[in-house]
Length: 207
Image (cartoon, rainbow, N blue to C red; front, side, top):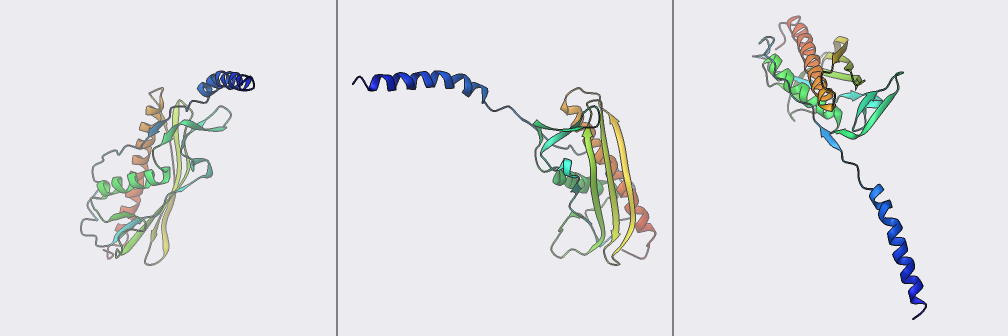
């Protein structure tokens, strides 16, 4: 009987020491963020009778953007990925989904799809996005991307351009970050829509 008491006492002491340790190891609350669609009026209706398909390829992200955490730029140019503010889903998928929705509005057509698209769809144009910067320094949001429009039939690049934009954040919390990120994607969509219209008009016989 006497040998059991020290054991019991040791267990009680161990439990007392583990209580504060358990409190320190409590999970940190995280906030999930989603890019918000920005409705835009059609630029033109050239694609109204378009029977082909505009196929958006998977968005390619720079290495520092491939995590779930929102990317913050620190003084001196260093980058920090947040561990408490995360994208609700993969960033490349969110960007792709928002751009497809934007382009459908801007070009007034439903013939735009994410890769691989409909099983029997006939892709006429292919859109590629390379996202090199998508971050905030707390005062402004910066996006740097390259978009490429290709002719899927002729297998040639029709246009390839860089898109850069810095937007001032008017809210101190991450809601301002996400709002500006959403608007930046809307502006990128608008520029790529204009590029698609330009190449389509240069090939009037292609429908």
